[in-house]
Image (cartoon, rainbow, N blue to C red):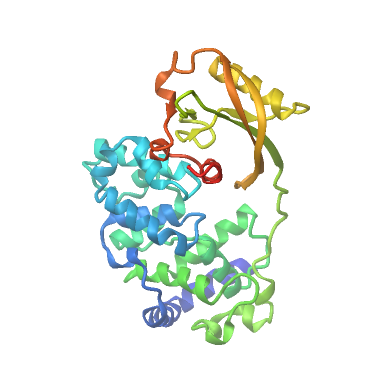
Length: 366
């Protein structure tokens, strides 16, 4: 019998005891988070989308404000995307908001406004993958399915001494199989939450707090004194550097010229200052003139350097050079007036911007 088969058998044999001890620990130690006080599938779904790639402490105020603005799934579906993006502002990873909005409309159209309980129908919705589906099904509908996020992967790698790289597809499938063996038929939602909470509070990256762990007696990593080396990380790709330029263009009334990004592109649907990425060998001045001519059909002169900002994204690091400028030729409000406009300092923050554009507004004292 190979090691993985042995581990799966061990998971099946110890599942009852693990669930009992873990749930008991969870009831005593869990954090009081707002999404743990609801049985509303929409609110649970929203929390899981927001918690992707965002720390819990940062999510809480956004979660509350979002539900105040869109208290029901139908409210979200009826609202324009721009309002949803504005409510999502400063959360980052805006594709989550676009997918949330698109999925809400599909749910209203195809599922009478109710999140589907069928796993295939749920995973067919934009932005819902295996983890989010498992979280919704177990926490909102009481289905005995696993919800395997980063915390759970780390816990299970240590609990069963999984020593293959976590980035490997085979390792990912094995961890999911372990989770399937462990999730109980009763209280699967609290169990999945408890596994995640254990990873967040005790079985943390680096050195885990093993003396306080309710599963220490079951942990093969702890027994083999290798818990600090697990999970095994694969090679991390270097994050490339990219450069871009932004032009601050004002008219005689002091208004700012802003442009809405294409819905299906980078930071889709958000507003920005004119400009874009630099091509290899381009100066910032040449790039700004070229991007404004190519994308907007306007000719600009580039004037003073105002600031240079750095912003980290999931796959690259951006250096943004911001210059003042003026429009020399071209009609900025035609032909696509809906995607470009002059915004007064009093009104400009009504539009949804990415974090780096908000930093520009802050620096300009707007």
